[in-house]
Length: 307
Image 1 (cartoon, rainbow, N blue to C red):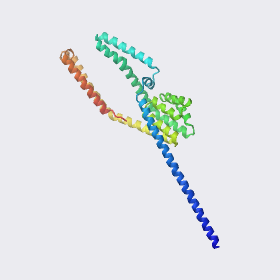
Image 2: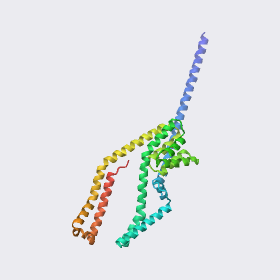
Image 3: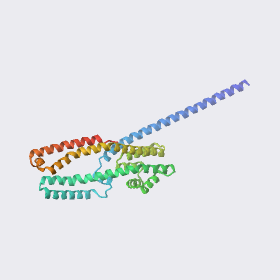
Image 4: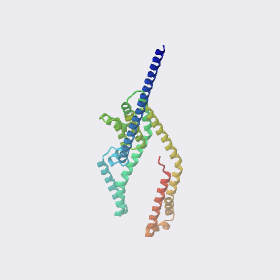
């Protein structure tokens, strides 16, 4: 009996030692798995950071062709140059007929041929980007619902490219076309940031890239991103509402000298005509315009918020 008890005790010790050894091995494997996963995630984040710097250099300084695409204009660079040249020529002829001054006409030609067309493109580009930002959270919600229902990511992107409104539909159509040509989903989504250089599309590209390399719950990540974008939109609207009073005051202050000068000219033109007929008056007008421009720029920087 004593030998049997000793044998059972030894067997129990061996079993416990074996179980403890297996538990230690499993624990080491879990730790090694966690470390390997963390290193993979750190490597992916470093690659994303380097890639983002390279992307930002190209996205934030787009060439003329890219700016025309971002503005939604169906024209190439050659046609834009031809139209700009025509606008500059018309401005030169009209200004020369009215003022008969070659210097003023050249200035008007430069403004009409170089400044005005690019200003119009920038205005259309920003307007299109605002429309994209307004609709983008709805597109993310559509991706989240599709992924939760079991659809692949590619199918949800096709749904956005066919069912959403412009300009989200056309931008995602470019992504879907790139993926159909064999480009990986992460690289195709990065092209969305290149064609629409916004922080919102940058966040979306980073989420897709990290998920494709390190794994994770894509629907939860995109749901959080959609909530963040909606909160950013609310904060942007709140900031605009709070700054409207300052913008109105700045507009009144900026227009006041011009309005007062125009009224004085209408009431007593001989009193203010010296500013336009004498060299001293020209210097005063130039100095006043310079200081007014500086004041307007300072007020603009004070009431414009970066968010």
